[in-house]
Amino acid sequence: MASKVVQFGPLTIPLSQVFLLSKHTYGLVNLKPIRPGHVLVVSRRKVARFNDLTLEEVTDLFTNGQRISKAVEKLFNADGLTLCVQDGDVAGQTVKHVHLHVIPRNTGDFANNDDIYSVLEGTGNVPQQTHVDNDQRVARTATDMAAEAKMLRRQVGGWDDAVGQFM
Image (tube, rainbow, N blue to C red; front, top):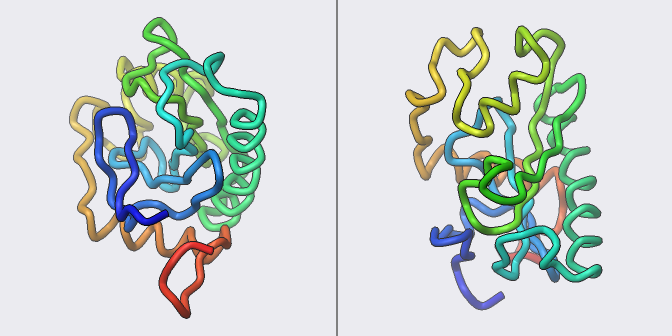
């Protein structure tokens, strides 16, 4: 990839925040994660709806989703994961570009396990442990996001430190 950026819906994302690039998807750290380690697996082709993806793109999205989920679970000491695609407005999709949320989970992180979905939709509050309401979540700095992406690149693989680029 010659470009130093990727597109996520209308947003231009620097590669410093990307930790995996494949033929059809990329792994991206989250600007406002609802849990530490909450990342996104995004279709490289900009399409709004899941059914608009080709079979090859779906396969790549979920194969890399599994690859990324293994790394996230290990790095963030998770007991499990929530994997979620919000497909369309009624499903809570805010960025009109197909993406899979990979969210590390721990026992008791939400009082009601399914509260995570209202937080994803922007209608609920983040877990009590963080003491921040969903609408008060502050965007992380580019430096913090780049550091997390670097850590994930090493765990996920696909990055060549010797030449400083994706393989």
